[in-house]
Image 1 (cartoon, rainbow, N blue to C red):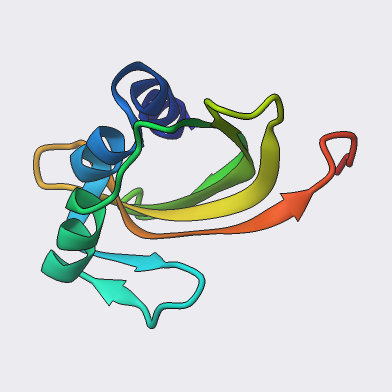
Image 2: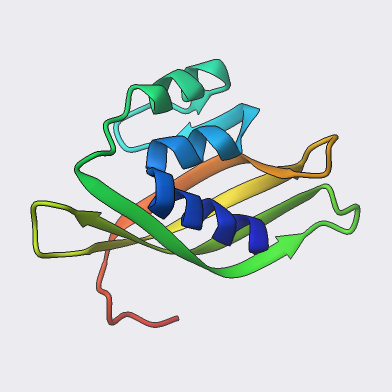
Length: 123
Protein backbone atom coordinates (compact mmCIF):
# COMPACT_ATOMS: atom_id res chain seq x y z
CA UNK A 1 0.00 0.00 0.00
CA UNK A 2 2.99 2.28 0.45
CA UNK A 3 3.58 2.38 -3.31
CA UNK A 4 -0.07 3.11 -4.04
CA UNK A 5 -0.11 5.89 -1.43
CA UNK A 6 3.10 7.36 -2.90
CA UNK A 7 1.40 7.21 -6.32
CA UNK A 8 -1.56 9.20 -4.94
CA UNK A 9 0.75 11.68 -3.21
CA UNK A 10 2.58 12.28 -6.50
CA UNK A 11 -0.75 12.86 -8.25
CA UNK A 12 -1.56 15.60 -5.74
CA UNK A 13 1.90 17.14 -5.90
CA UNK A 14 2.60 17.04 -9.64
CA UNK A 15 -0.69 16.11 -11.30
CA UNK A 16 -2.46 12.95 -12.36
CA UNK A 17 -0.70 12.70 -15.71
CA UNK A 18 2.79 12.91 -14.20
CA UNK A 19 1.95 10.32 -11.55
CA UNK A 20 0.38 7.83 -13.96
CA UNK A 21 3.29 8.09 -16.41
CA UNK A 22 5.73 7.55 -13.52
CA UNK A 23 3.96 4.46 -12.17
CA UNK A 24 2.69 2.65 -15.30
CA UNK A 25 4.52 -0.50 -16.42
CA UNK A 26 5.68 -0.40 -20.06
CA UNK A 27 3.00 -3.03 -20.80
CA UNK A 28 0.42 -1.46 -18.50
CA UNK A 29 -3.30 -1.51 -19.30
CA UNK A 30 -5.84 1.23 -18.64
CA UNK A 31 -9.53 0.39 -18.55
CA UNK A 32 -11.49 3.59 -19.14
CA UNK A 33 -15.16 4.30 -19.90
CA UNK A 34 -15.91 4.44 -23.61
CA UNK A 35 -12.62 2.80 -24.61
CA UNK A 36 -11.41 -0.68 -25.38
CA UNK A 37 -8.48 -1.65 -23.11
CA UNK A 38 -5.61 0.77 -23.73
CA UNK A 39 -2.34 -1.19 -23.65
CA UNK A 40 1.38 -0.46 -23.39
CA UNK A 41 2.67 2.43 -25.51
CA UNK A 42 -0.92 3.34 -26.41
CA UNK A 43 -1.73 3.69 -22.70
CA UNK A 44 1.25 5.98 -22.22
CA UNK A 45 0.22 8.04 -25.28
CA UNK A 46 -3.33 8.23 -23.88
CA UNK A 47 -1.96 9.56 -20.58
CA UNK A 48 0.29 12.12 -22.29
CA UNK A 49 -2.75 13.57 -24.07
CA UNK A 50 -4.72 14.06 -20.84
CA UNK A 51 -5.28 17.59 -19.55
CA UNK A 52 -5.11 17.43 -15.78
CA UNK A 53 -4.90 21.15 -15.03
CA UNK A 54 -8.61 21.56 -14.21
CA UNK A 55 -8.79 19.05 -11.35
CA UNK A 56 -6.90 17.19 -8.68
CA UNK A 57 -7.09 13.44 -8.25
CA UNK A 58 -6.07 11.52 -5.16
CA UNK A 59 -7.04 8.23 -3.61
CA UNK A 60 -6.82 6.26 -0.44
CA UNK A 61 -5.84 2.60 -0.70
CA UNK A 62 -8.01 0.49 1.59
CA UNK A 63 -6.62 -2.98 0.95
CA UNK A 64 -3.53 -4.55 -0.57
CA UNK A 65 -2.56 -8.10 -1.40
CA UNK A 66 0.82 -9.42 -2.56
CA UNK A 67 1.30 -12.87 -4.11
CA UNK A 68 3.32 -15.50 -2.26
CA UNK A 69 6.09 -15.01 -4.84
CA UNK A 70 6.08 -11.27 -3.94
CA UNK A 71 6.15 -10.14 -7.57
CA UNK A 72 2.46 -9.38 -8.21
CA UNK A 73 -0.20 -7.69 -6.12
CA UNK A 74 -3.25 -5.50 -6.14
CA UNK A 75 -4.66 -2.54 -4.25
CA UNK A 76 -8.12 -1.07 -4.14
CA UNK A 77 -9.75 1.88 -2.49
CA UNK A 78 -11.65 5.11 -2.95
CA UNK A 79 -10.60 8.04 -5.11
CA UNK A 80 -11.59 11.70 -4.97
CA UNK A 81 -11.70 13.84 -8.11
CA UNK A 82 -11.94 17.54 -7.32
CA UNK A 83 -12.69 19.88 -10.24
CA UNK A 84 -11.01 23.25 -9.61
CA UNK A 85 -13.96 25.25 -10.96
CA UNK A 86 -16.66 23.47 -8.92
CA UNK A 87 -17.36 23.35 -5.22
CA UNK A 88 -17.73 19.58 -5.17
CA UNK A 89 -15.76 16.37 -4.94
CA UNK A 90 -16.60 13.31 -7.05
CA UNK A 91 -15.87 9.95 -5.46
CA UNK A 92 -15.36 6.52 -6.95
CA UNK A 93 -13.65 3.20 -6.40
CA UNK A 94 -10.53 1.87 -8.10
CA UNK A 95 -8.35 -1.19 -8.38
CA UNK A 96 -4.73 -1.36 -9.51
CA UNK A 97 -2.75 -4.51 -10.22
CA UNK A 98 0.96 -4.14 -9.51
CA UNK A 99 4.06 -5.92 -10.79
CA UNK A 100 7.48 -5.78 -9.15
CA UNK A 101 10.11 -4.53 -11.57
CA UNK A 102 13.65 -5.88 -11.94
CA UNK A 103 14.93 -2.89 -9.93
CA UNK A 104 12.60 -3.76 -7.02
CA UNK A 105 10.13 -0.93 -7.66
CA UNK A 106 6.43 -1.59 -8.20
CA UNK A 107 4.54 -0.36 -11.27
CA UNK A 108 0.92 -0.94 -12.13
CA UNK A 109 0.07 -3.32 -14.97
CA UNK A 110 -3.67 -2.59 -14.85
CA UNK A 111 -5.67 0.35 -13.54
CA UNK A 112 -9.40 0.94 -13.58
CA UNK A 113 -12.02 2.81 -11.60
CA UNK A 114 -15.75 3.26 -11.20
CA UNK A 115 -17.26 6.66 -10.55
CA UNK A 116 -20.32 7.62 -8.65
CA UNK A 117 -20.25 6.67 -4.99
CA UNK A 118 -21.61 8.78 -2.16
CA UNK A 119 -18.86 10.08 0.13
CA UNK A 120 -20.83 8.75 3.10
CA UNK A 121 -20.85 5.15 1.80
CA UNK A 122 -18.89 2.74 3.95
CA UNK A 123 -17.37 -0.67 3.37
